Amino acid sequence: MTQQRSEKEQQENEWHRGACIYQIYPRSFLDTGGDGIGDLPGITQKLDYIASLGIDGIWISPFFTSPMKDFGYDVANYRDVDPIFGTLDDFKILLAKAHRLNLKIIIDLVLSHTSDQHPWFTESRTSHDNPKADWYVWADPRPDMFGERVPPNNWVSVFGGPAWTFDETRGQYYLHNFLKEQPDLNFHNPDVQNAMLDICKFWLDLGVDGFRLDVVNFYFHDQELRDNPPRSAELGPATQFEGDDPYSAQNHIYDKTRPENLVFLERLRTLTNNYDNRALIGEGGDDHFFQLADTYCTNNRLHTMYTPQLCAGKQKRLTADLISHPVIDFLEQAPNAFPMWAFSNHDVVRAASRWCPDSDGFGHNPALSKTLIALLGCLQGSFFLYQGEELGLPEAKLEFEDLQDPWGKHLWPDWQGRDGCRTPLPWNNETNAGFTTAEPWLPIAKTHPPLNAEKQDSDPASTLNFTRAFLGWRKHQSALIFGAITFIETGSDTLLAFERKSNEQTLLCIFNLKDTSQTLPPLLLPENIKTVFPAENQSTGSLPPYSFQIWKYV
Image 1 (cartoon, rainbow, N blue to C red):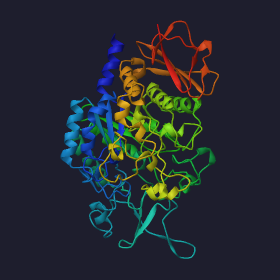
Image 2: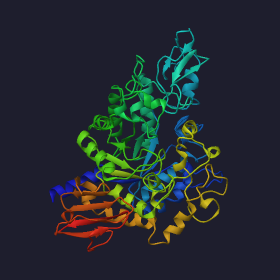
Image 3: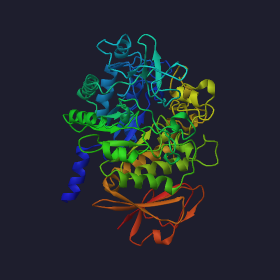
Image 4: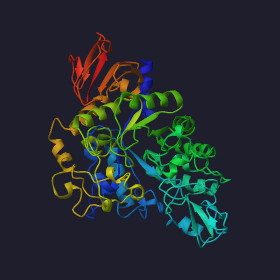
C-alpha cells in the first residue's frame, strides 16, 4: 500500500506525469467575434466539451499581442492578449472556468525571440549605445572575396535563407533563427534573462499551471559566431519536413543547444518552484534529442520535454518499429527525463493522414484514428492530443493561394507547410462548419464537415465517443499512468505488442497497424489474462484491420 500511495501522491504533486493534455491552436478553434479567427471566448465556450473528453489539461498556443507574421510566435507584448483573440480579462475568465472543471492550463511561451515590432527591438536597432542595444544579437558585416557585405557567418534560418538580416539604421546584421521579423534575443545579457523571468512570473502569478517553452534550446548562441560545419548524412533531416532544405545541410552546433542555456533553465526552475505544482515543458529540435532531454530534465531544470520523434514526415508506413524504437531510445538515453508523446500538432501533418496508406496524403480511416488515440494513450509517459484528433480529422489539402504559412510558401510545392493541420475545426453542419459567421482565415477543409463534433456526439460509434470512452477508462488504469513499458516481439512488423506494469496491475496491449486482419501468435496470449478494453472477456485469436485489444493479467 505504501508504494501504491506514493504513485498517487506523485501524480498529485506532478500533475503532468501520465497526463493527457489537449492542444488548442486558438486561431482555428472557435470564432465568437465574427472576424473569421478563433478567440479566447471561443475556447471558454467549449471548455465543457473539452472536459468531456477526459483530458487533464490544455495547452494553448500563443495568444499574445503580435503582428502575426508567424501567427503568434512573433510576440510584441508578452503581458497582454492580442485583440483578435480577446482581452486579458477573457483569459482570466477562461482560466477560472478551466480550474472549476479541474483542467490545468499551460500557455505557450516564446522566449528565444520577439517580434521586430516589440518595443525592445524598436529601441535596440536605433543605435549601438541605447539601453536595449545589447538585448538582441547584432554583428558587423564581413566582406566577401569581392569586398561585398555579407553576413557574419553561415547560419541559416529554419524558414529559409540566411539567419541574418542587415539593418540599415544600425549598420549591422541581426540574428533570426526563424523569420526576419523574429529577431533573436541575446540571452548572454543578464538583463534579458531577468526580463524573461519576470514575464514568466507575471503569468505564474495569474495562475497558469505551467509553460510549454517553444524552441527551448535556441535561447543562447555561440558568442564567437563560428560557422556551423556541414551535416553528415547519418544525422538525417534537421526538421519535421524531412526533405532537402538548406537548414538540413548544416550541423547546428553553434546556433543552438549551447551550454550556457542550462544555467538559465535552472533559474527558471527556481522561480517555478515558488509556486505549487507547476510544470515546465520544453520543446526543441536537436540532432541528439534524447541526450538533450536527459540534460534538460534534471531535478533543477525542466520537468519534461515535448517529444517530437513520432510527429515527423509527410507520409510514412506505420510499423511497430516506427513506434517502439523512439520510445526505447528515449527511456534508455534519457533516464533523467519523462517523455511527453504526440502524434500531431500545429506544425506537422496530421497523423490520421500521415500514417494512412493508399491515399494521397490527405486520406483517413476512422478505425485507424481510433487505434492511434489508444496507442498514444498506452505509451509510457504523458501525451498530447491536438485539436481535431478526437474527431479523426485528416490533413487538409490547400491550394497555393490559400496558404498563410510562410514556411509552406517557401517549401511549395514539395510541402504545403503547416496550414494543412491548422484549418478551422468543424463544430456542426451550419455555414463554415459552425466555426465562424465570417470568412475563415483558412478554408474549411472539404473532408472535415462530415466529421463535425455535433454529428459525432450523437453517434455511439464515432471517433469522438471512442476518445471519451478510452480516456475515461485510462484514468483508472495505474499501469498506463505510472507503469513501465516492455515491448514484445510479434514476428510481424505491423503488429505492435507491449506490457505496461505498475505496482497494482499489468496490462498487455496489442495493436494491429495494418489495413488487413492479423492472427495473433499463440505465445503472445498466456492463459492468465482477460480482455478489458475495448471489450471485456472477449476471446480473440486475431485482430481486425486497424484495431487493438488490451488484456489484464489475473
